[in-house]
Image 1 (tube, rainbow, N blue to C red):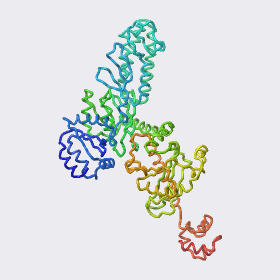
Image 2 (spheres, helix red, strand yellow):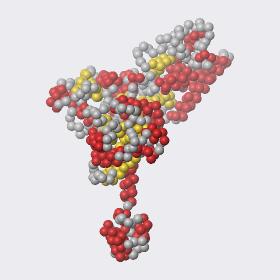
Image 3 (tube, rainbow, N blue to C red):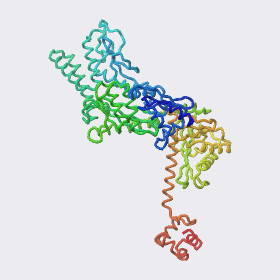
Amino acid sequence: MSIANIEQRLHAVPDSPGIYIMKDAQDNVLYVGKANVLKNRVRSYFQSSINHQPKTIRMVARIEDFEFVVTNTEAEALILENTFIKKHKPPYNVRLKDDKTYPYLKIDLHEDFPRVYLTRRIIDDGSRYFGPFATVGTLRKTMDLIKKLFPYRSCTKNITGRDAKPCLEYHINRCVAPCTGYASKTDYDEVIKQVILFLEGKTDTVERNLKAQLETASTDLNFERAAVLRDQLQAIQKVSEEQDLKVASLVSEDSDVIAVEIGDSEAWVEIFFVRTGKLVGRDNFFMQGTKDTDRNFVITQFIKQFYETASVIPPTILVEAEPLEKGLIESWLSEKRGKKVAISVPMRGHKRKILEVASNNAQQGLTQHKVKWVTDSDAVYKAAEDLQEYLGLPEFPGRIECYDVSHIQGTNTVGSMVVFESGIARPKKYRRFKIKTVEGVDDYESMREMVSRRFSRLGPINTEEIVASGNRSNSWEERPQLVLIDGGKGQLSAVQEVMLHLGLQDIPLASLAKENEWVFTPDSQEPIILPRDSESLFLLQRLRDEAHRFAITYHRNIRSKSALKSPIDMVTGVGPKRKRMLIRQFGSVQGIKNAEIDDIAAVPGMTRTLAIRIKEVL
C-alpha cells in the first residue's frame, strides 16, 4: 500500500471503539485487533517502527489493505475480536489451536432422566456445560471417573420405568437402571445433583451428602444401599486425598491458575482448576502465532479466548504476568460470571507456590510434547509426506540433509550437515566441515565450498541398501531426496550453482528463512508459506535448529582448541615431545623467545634449522 493511499485511508478511520482487520495482497486476513480509539491504533502501525516488535514489522511489510468494524464500547470490541480471530485464524494473531473443536461435557436438564454426554456446541438451552477440555481423551477420562462414582445413564432410550430387565451397565454398577424402575426420578435426580457438584469442584459437599445418606440407609437397615454409598464415599475420599496432595492447601479460595511456556512458534498453556483448596482438574492448551510475542500478550489472548466459552469462571485467576487491559478484561469476566472476578500476579506466599507448580508443568508439557512428536513415527512420517506435497517433491523425502555455516567475525568458519531419515534425526550420519578456501565473512562462498565438498563424494550406490545397513561410512555416498539450506534466496542460489556445476540439478533444493519461516525453492519466485501449525513446518524447523546446534558445537570446540594453542604450536617440525623438552629447558614460551639460537639448538632433539624457524615465528 502506497504512503499516499495509507494517509487517505487513515483519515477515514473514526475515533470510535471497534476492531480492525489487516489484509495482504491476496486479501488474506493477517491480523485482527481491537482498540478503544480505532484511528490512533491503526495509524500506529504505519508510523516509525522503532518501537515495533520484529513480528509486527514483518506483518506491516505484508499489509496491502485494512478494514474496520465500529462498536458501541470497547467491551463489545473485545467480544467481536475473539469472533473474528476464531473465524479467520490470522497468522499474526496469538490464538488457541483448533479452538472450534474443543469438547464440552453436557448435562441435559430438560430430560426427565438427564444424560451426561460429550458435545462440541454450546447453546443457550438451559443445560449445564463443563469445559472446554483440551482433548476428547481428557474429557472421556473425566466421564469415566464420574460414572464410577455416580452411575448415571449413558443410553439414549426413552425412560418409562417399565423395562423388563436392566442392561449390563446396571450389573457392573455403572447405572442405577431408571429404565426398570429400580431408581425413581428422585433417586436419579440425586445422582445428577452429585455429578454437578463434583464437576463444580465441591467435593466436600458431595462427601457430606453421601455421609448423610449412608447414615440414613444404616438406620433404616438398608444394608445393600449402605454398601453402595460406602463404596462411593471411599472413592470420593480417595480422589480428594490425591487432590490435597497435589495442591497441599496452597490456595483456599476457588481459583484458576494459568502458566505459560513459550516455544519457537507455539506456547503451552497449563491451567489448574482449584476449588476449596483442592486441585479438582487441570488442562493444557496450545496457542499458535506466539513467535516474538511477550508473555503478557499470550496470557491476555488465552484469557479472552478461553473464558469466552468457559462453563465456569472462578472469582480469582492467578497468572504469571499481568494481562494487557487488565481492568477491561476483569469487567468483562465479572459481567459473564455475574459476580466480581479478579486477576492477580502473586509474587510471594502460597499463591506464588501453586503458580510455580503450574509453571513447572507448563515447561515439562512443552518439552514432552516435542519429545512425543519426535518419537511418534506416524506423526513424523505424515509430516514428511505432507512436506512432499507442499514443496512438490518428485518422491517421498526419505533422506533430508540440512546445511548451516557458523563463524565469529569471519574466524574459524565451519559448516554442518545433519541428516533426517523419514523425519527422524540420524546423528551417526552427521558431518562437519572446516572451511578452508574462504577468508573473512562470506556465507555464500562458505556454503558453496561445503556443498561442493559434500556432493563431490556422492557415489552411484543403492540408497535403500545403505539405509538398511546404517553404515556410517556410507553417509557421504547416500543421495538425499531434499537438501535444505539455513538461509534465504542468496544461500539457495549459491547452492543451486554448485549443484548445476556437479550435474546434480535433479536433487530438490529448498531454504528456510528464519525471519518469517518462509520456504524458498529454485522453481518458485514467491516464497512457500507453510501453515504455522503444520507438522511439516515443525519438521523443517527441527532440521534447521539441529544443523545450527551442530555447527555451533563444532565451532565452539575449534575455538576452545585454538585458545589452548601457543605460538610455538605453529612451528612446523615442533611436536608435543619437542615442545615439552623446550618448556622444560627454558620454563615458558617467553623463555624460549628470549633464548639464543645456539641455546635452542642445544636442546636434545632439536636442530639449528628448527631453532632458526622457532625464532622467526616467536
